[in-house]
Amino acid sequence: MSKKKDYDAIIIGGGHMGLTLGAYLQRAGMQTAIFERRHEEGSAIFTSECTAPGFLHNLHAQYMEFLEWMPIWYDFDLPKFGARSLYPSAQAGLPFSDGRPPLIIYSVEKEESYEKTYKSVAQYSKHDAETLVDLLKKLQEIKSIFAQGWYNPPPIPTPEDPEPDNQGGIMLLQQIGLPTRISKMTTKDTIDYLFESDEMRAMFYRLGVEWGAGLDIDGSGAGLFAAIGLFYFNWQLMVGGTHTLAHAMEMAGVNEGMEFFESNEVVKVLLEGKKAVGVQLKDGTKVYAKLVASNAEIEGTMLRMVGEENLSPLWVKRVKDFEIGPSCVLGSTAMALHEAPDFKSARWNPDINKAFYTIVGFDSAAELYEYCHDAHSGKIPKTYGEGIWVNSLWDPTYAPPGKHSLTGWIFLPKASSQSREKWEEIRATWNDNFLKNFERFAPNMTKDNIIDDYFYTPQDQEDEMRLMEGDFCNGGVKASQRGHNRPFPEAAQYRTEIENLYLCGPFMHPGGGASAGPGYNCFKIIAEDFGLDKFWEKLDRGY
Image (cartoon, rainbow, N blue to C red):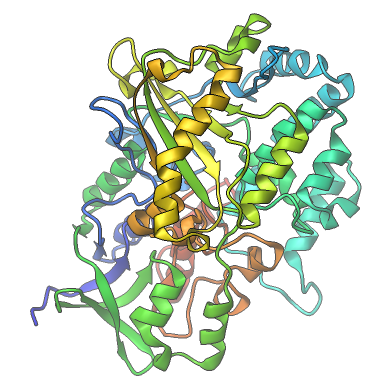
């Protein structure tokens, strides 16, 4: 067996959470190395020419909702390393097959955007228009509170406050003037309570599952407001593909002196007693360090790399009981187009043809609810609908001149719910079925408009990006797996029962999405344990 040089810190996996942690550790004076099993870093933040040359598709991470608050964006000046973003004004749209006026929600960037949103929603309900605009304004005023909750380790329960996360949700509802009983409601019930029109309910049923919670999960209602305040209608597009964000993070680490080893899979965490001292690679190479942090999935890290025999029965049970999916499981459609979609509803408002995120294939709240419920119940949805992005409308680098690149998300059952053969059947038929439905809403979306297409299944997401079951959070975000319970109480502070072994993946608080939160928060815990400079305490941002 060969041996590489020793490091202060080793990170398993080069996803953006690991890249974040590594950059901060290196800057803090710890010589850090990342070992990545794939040929490149970034994991779910990657861009592919999977249809035809020159057509870029972000097969997983698509919109960037955290850039305004993401610490690494500012602390390491990621734009200096090539990360640039655009802020589309028409953020979310819902067209209809009968050509009635589209529902469009505009960005929260400018005051006139609220007026546009009000006008669009009021076509169906003045009550809904007033409710939404009022909510958006109130939540924007307190958005820094959400960021502080996201970019700090979760609160630790005490005898006086055994459920601190619940208290936070109740305080939020009180602050925006809504009944606290919403904290006990499902996302669907909360949407139905807020909005009366079928059109608004339809849009928010789809948006309601974007942040990871199923529509029917008790206690998920308050989380909807956190999503509206922090995630929705603040979406940005990475110029040149989301991979530019991962590349910038990597270059920030290189600039600090961090080292990277691609195509180097870690198969074992080396132990001395109950203390992590390094890793062993697939080729047998051993690499030693003062600490090890894993961005890989929790089961693979703890049960295989550490080994059940080195864990207590409690930790073995906790890891095995940690639920992955079903509400965060995605597939992706990619299509290279001659023309961008031209929706029937555009005759009322042409902005629907340039909405950043467009919900296509549904005419009613009942259809969207059935679609979400089927996917989360282990069934292939009967309605072939998606949330789509035509990024070339905003950034021409996504497609050759005069052409367009479309990518869509589909919520689907867990990868293990279907055989690999079944997923191949779905891959072969989904896009054609989706296109038939799509044409009802945009008549130019025929086969003649398609240059080439591709379908990315939940099984692909697991195989390629190690998003287990196709779950973009690598662990469901139900109430019992959020905040100080994520992934379970004994691990919620990013430490494990193995000394100097830490966890920084999306199965940690605050969860998945391109937030960099778990990596940043894990750094804070390591800084405390190793006496590193707590620079964030000198800043006025609260994290």
